Image 1 (cartoon, one colour):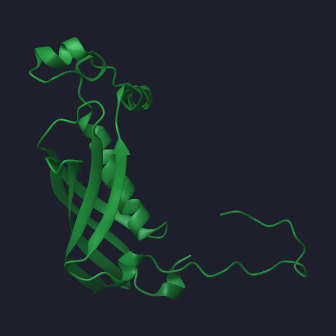
Image 2: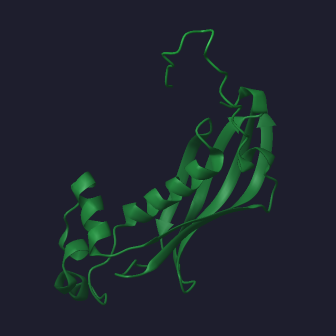
Length: 162
């Protein structure tokens, strides 16, 4: 939270935070998508942050030795893309309660990766909206790369947001 240094007489109230789309979500709603085109630079930056300099992710020869066309992206990077999708959808006040995700295909260099989701259950309890979501990643050509489930929650009252 940022603090204003303005005097109380000159301070203005911040604009109310609009409720995220998740607050009004119903079963069957799609979350939109989080998209990235990955390459060696993307993987190198991710590896640097996570100390994940593994041959199969850095060297085409290692990827080919494992049966791929070259180096492949990290599964944890797809996991991160799913988290980015969820966070953007539920906003800062929402909580990602759980994510379960399994890889189904390799992310290869130059591939467009899309993270998406669909609401499969909505409940309200204890002042929160709780949403169960099927999540997945796919290539730009539609091949499934991973799939899983997530549970997110956010305050049920827009006044409690922000």
